[in-house]
Amino acid sequence: MLVRYRDGMNESPPADVADVLAAVLNTDNPVHVALRRQVPHLSVRARCTCGCGTAYFDLDTSDVEPAPTSPSTVVAAEAQLVTEAGECPGEVLVSTQDGYLAWLEVCSWSDDIEVTLAAARHWLQTRS
Image (cartoon, rainbow, N blue to C red; front, side, top):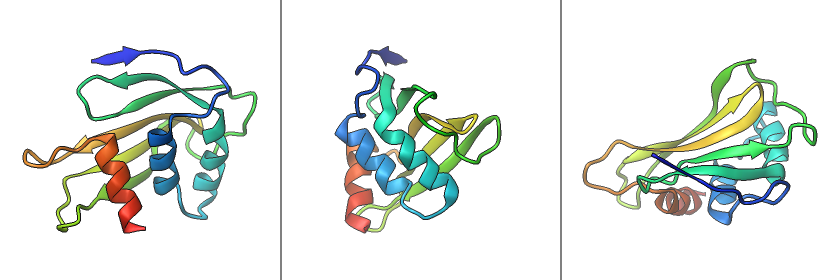
């Protein structure tokens, strides 16, 4: 289930989303570089209501260039989540459509560890 809302076009995404995108798109790979340029132009269109923190984006494509990805929907970046105890409870996926950021998905593989966007943000920032 999704909750739909508008953060307002041309506003930066919320800090939790921006921080996770920065951590996942942190290489010099040309796709990551192009996607990082899109982040300031994102707004969050909807979020999953299950608590995972998955976010779906709106992006004014007239303001940015597409990333050099497939002209379809692809996972352009991913990061495995590792806790302080070394457990791997899930991952974060960044998907694009036609080279533009489309959504940030928080995936859980664990029944024992709650995987949320806030937890993903913490785990990604502590491993850097």
